[in-house]
Image (cartoon, rainbow, N blue to C red; front, side, top):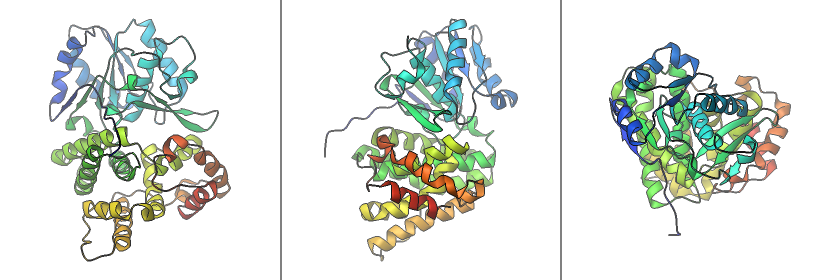
Length: 382
């Protein structure tokens, strides 16, 4: 085994009712004036109030400007509010967008240059204000990763700020925080977590540690996503999905993700398709392309997805894994083609060009891709 590292949030707190420890963690981190980073919907449905009632005796601010697929400008707006309010910490309440914004603000607030100067790997110069992440979706894993994904609308691309300084100080994963998710978000975020787990398991940078997390996350998601989708108040399924998402986040945060994410980025950047949906649309087609590079791993994935493969060849087992993935997406009503989102067919060539340049992700993939092959995958997914 080659040398590998394993990094996650400094502290993980999980389980029903885990949010009640928030005041203790703020005190431990010496945060006296936090800024809550969230969106208007979570504020309207009372989730923000549920958390802010725990902050009695503290001064705090609230930023509700988070949007899906957040743009660079939102980080700049939130950073301005953070500085104006003399805040000394961040509490992210929401999905990956809110957590990614909070992580980016932490890295950017003490930086003298432009936000775009931080895009890339290891360009954040120092640790910023503490970040406590309270995810309300079970999908992104952002609460345990060192990356903030932002949309550059001018370039029509998603870009990442990657730095260990962005790892949250605390991740509080409480299943009740996910109960407000509508079924469509449950589906998209759940399949997003499944993509993270599968791509981490077949990554060229996988390790025995990430393997254990990733393959068990696949099984937990296959077992629990349909239940959480069918019955949003199924607290056991919600807790299992929250745990599986966390495990998948720990896996891909260290092993990396691959071609599914690389091909999904242009869909979000150009057409504002939600990240989880973009991944779900492309996963079966990229899996089908990747399978010959790691048939043994696809056999494991098929078993984790509930398939009986002991009498099948490796290729037959891999085909079962792809078919099972397609069925799971159908069960939770993920659209099955790019055409369903009115993406013009003549955009495929440009999307393939954009995706082919995302070496940070493609270098993790078990099979190499040319621009022409990426274009073929887009066309098969159309």
